Length: 587
Image (tube, rainbow, N blue to C red; front, side, top):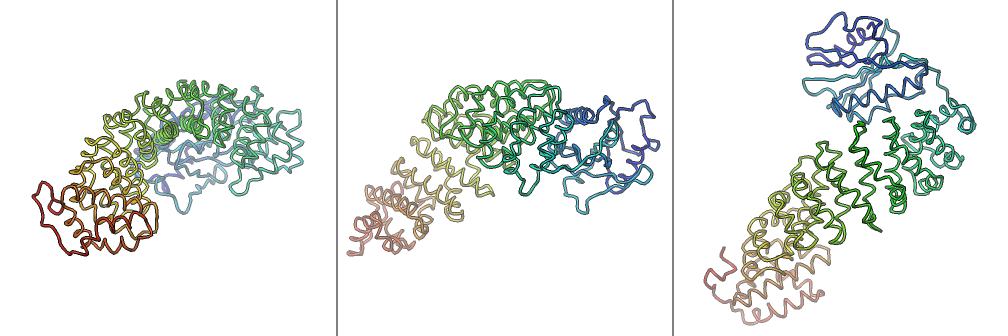
């Protein structure tokens, strides 16, 4: 407790003043002294948890990493503000806080430096906001258990020493060499992946995955191979040719959570390289193991499982097999009920991949009953959840009319009609794209959209980025091709005509052609209602005739001039406005 007492004194002033604090301390020396600090602070709570000791430092590392990871996932995943550890020289070259950092999100590892009598807390000069915001703080104190056990001094190995160590028969030498490989390929900038592959180390690293009596060695090998899989396709191919997939799949059932999690990550990296390797992972029976992990009591991070599952759904050239999709959909449906934003994000992306295709593919997803939940997620304030849920629902409404109606029945339009005004242009674009597909439906559906969506659509056409304007133009085009004459009148009353005319000057041939088609449809409707002269006057007042004449290289523009404006220009006559039931100019 001397160390804990000093630790609490050190962190109080620079970090914890004015906060309620819960400090979790893990020790294998519970009987060595009192369980509470000698000078308790008001509003502070210390929780001391006992862990098992081990005669070997590798055992200490693995046991404690698993224990801390499990505890954190169960109690405050992504709510931890800091991980404080006592850095000992003999431990500097071995597993460190990097093992645990994925748990915490905003983790900053503070180090306690010096002897027990002269400890100082090294706090970063600038601490990112999330670490010190709020009224209640959580710290995880790792100094006690990392100071226990028999530690060995870390050494730096040359490539030749690594090759010798990897090929040694002594598991300790293999571990040291494999860890050195892992650290090399974990470098943030220019990791020497090619060097490791060309050194011929992959076959031995793959063999280490099979050594279940040595989970630390399995873990380091899996980590190193994961980082190699994040390299080029050629480097990933070297792993696959080295036989890495089957032992990684076997590790999905490892009793050691850290090893299991790393295997999930490695397989996800391999599957994400392309459809060939994705299908090899699937054919190695990985999906049932992943399903078992989701339903298991093992507290493995669902984020890794979801990300890997998403990669198994990705790529449509070719699509994953129908059998694989049928296996995946129940677990994706289950994960969609989770509350973690990263789990939800990757789950929605997986569903968006699966719906990006034929009506049959869309039907597989729709039939799971996930549409109401996806609609809920379209209201998320978190962009990483909103974007893929909107993409998925946008894919659904590209399907059959029955599938589109299913999306509407799930409440999609109520949410979708709010999204064109979202501050993110990417959301505006996706929302306009989804609306354009809904608009390609029956007239009753078009009427609802005209009544509710025209104001935001006009705003997008007037002020949106080009990618957004493009989708909004398609929406209006679908209104005109499927709507009635009265619905076209409503379009003119909505103010959309002026925005379309103004867009005739953009340098985008496809969009200009679509706008000319829309104008042609509206002019034809006006002619049938004996209102063409009034509409032509309105277009002329907007400067539309000059813009259309400037586009006479377009066949559509030439046709509009010849069919709708030539006679009016010659005679100069404008018909009087008709009654309000059939009038373009009066709202």
